[in-house]
Length: 130
Image (cartoon, rainbow, N blue to C red):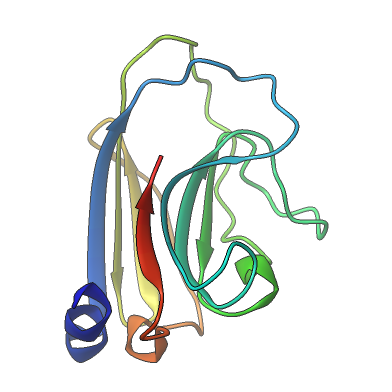
């Protein structure tokens, strides 16, 4: 049901609060994921931690991956932002067709465009939190 509504609107917004417990990890931790499998047909991943795409994508702290197979790499370019372990973080991701914005603690921290629109999302992707 989530995917159908997102595809029809060709837009999505995801808001989350999270409290990072560990910053020194080997790969990004998924906070929110809408994907068919772990690495294929991903609609959206919002992750915290070091960059995980082998393409050198930016996003050392908040990483966004939108649409496609191959674990949705490359990630959307999101600059590193200092995080303090144990601090509550507020993040909002919005995408309207090809334009996306990431808000961090109430401030629009970065925006951009992508060819991967919500209208093209995979119908079979499931929602995973944490």
